[in-house]
Amino acid sequence: MIPKMTVKVPRRRSMVELGDLNRPFLMSVEDVFPRNQGRLVLATGRIERGRVHEGDAVELVGHGVGATACVLAVDAGSVRLDEAGAGMNVGLLLPGTVVARGQVLAAPGSIRAHVAFAADIALLSEQEGGAEVATGDILEFYIRANGVRGKVTLPDEVGTLQPLHMATASVMLEQPVALENGHSFAFRHHGRAAGSGTVTQILRM
Figure 1 (cartoon, rainbow, N blue to C red):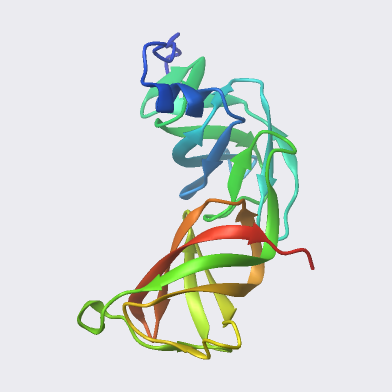
Figure 2 (cartoon, helix red, strand yellow; figure 1 turned 45 degrees about the vertical axis):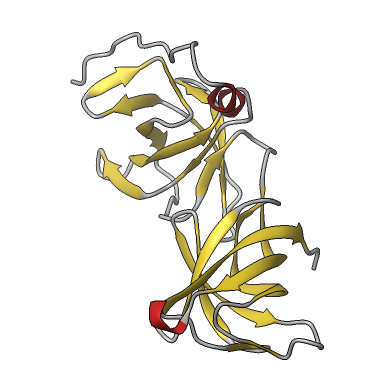
């Protein structure tokens, strides 16, 4: 039995950290461990923003899943916590449900999954692995802990983007992932690290 401790998130933080704590809860799922023959699951990851407590309702977002579950326990290593906040690596014990790496657990209604978005992208140099990208190319996008393939469309006047260049592009993913404006991501092309980008607009399909 894991001992339960009352651990409060420190209140004296920088303004950036305090802002993260006061935003709606969000944690990217990095690993999933079944418990009690699958009747429970422990979803682990780093809390990106907000706070979470035992008994809170969280929404599972991404991969076409939109279920809501109650947090049965908050675990940090071998210690049970009453509260965990932004920047902490924790495990959340949930009733048995379909949870997978790359999904997020979030305050209900605070973030949605999407398949299409516009982004500013920048390619690495050829020495770093960058290769030209053309409209219609399929890239592997890494968004939080999620890796998902997506098709790129460049502006007509660009046609092909060369290494060390930047452009605004639209992306159509093969499956929905939790997305919001301003989120950064990396991508691979031909199996090599190729560049990075920032979401500038969610495109409604």
